[in-house]
Image (cartoon, rainbow, N blue to C red):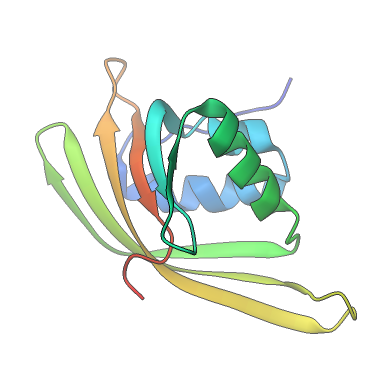
Length: 128
């Protein structure tokens, strides 16, 4: 069984996402999101629902390589937190050349009844 790391503190979310990405397991990424969470795609489209989120995460995993994500801030207000992070994926392109993909995200996460935190809005390029 795959270990799924769900954050108990909002400032752990971006590291948990990078760890899930680096595992290559889409289920670990999906587990970090509420069922009706919203994801903003690179083109600005907003998606929601498990099937669309799963498809988006599978496409993300196709990039391969290693992700790092560094929190820039975490602002907690009751059961909601707003995060901003700088992330990068170091991988290879179709010619097997090293490339780095970077972005700055803005995310909203919510404390769950069990004390863990899950995404309600993920905008990977929201601070670019």
